[in-house]
Amino acid sequence: MRKSFLFMGITAMVLSVLFFVSPVSAQIADGTYEINYEMKEADNDNTSIADGYFTKPATLTVENGVQHIQLTLTGIEYIKSLSGPAGPVDIISEDEANDTRVVKFPVDGDLSQPVSMDMHIIVPDLYDQTHTARAVFDVSGLPEAGGAAEQETEDGGSEGTDGDEAAGGAVENPPTGDNSSIGLYVLLLAGSAIALFAIWKFRPARN
Image (cartoon, rainbow, N blue to C red; front, side, top):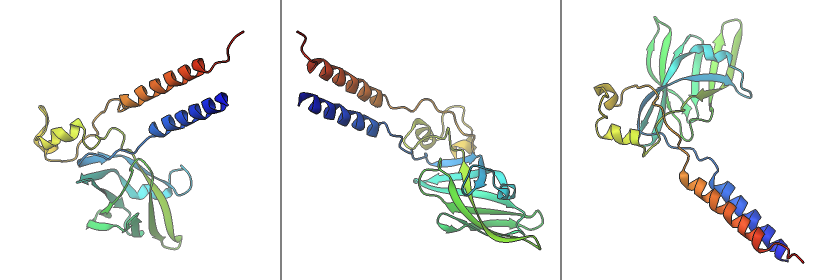
């Protein structure tokens, strides 16, 4: 009976530890960032043929936790419509002479996950179809909400930061350190110690 309770206790402890160390998507700090991205096919990691219509990088703006992506499209005579997760994108500007269009759309949730986009593409005498692709954004290295980088921005920028960056202009992705919480390691250490003590406490008595 003791062995059964011991096994159940250790199992519950391990499951609890796994729950606490599960990765949680972090909210990106308010600001404006230039981020690289790639359009991939809807059901695999191959680069989509639609990738050639999208100029890199994209612009990400985060204001009060609300995220918007701004993209520049080329070959706009072929792209008849484009929709993001929340519906059709907003057209910010269009330059027919250079065959470009700037669009913007909101994105909720974790931007490290692919964003599904639908587009109607017509190539005369060759192609006329609604095409689905996944925009994969590289948000690694962006500051998290509540972090030091956000505080520096709120304070008007740290020493050595120019005015454009302090005003929230497009900036390079800042490097970040190890964001792992030390509390998780303490929890793991404590759990291991409890398990070892339980095994020692309820070990079979030797003759």
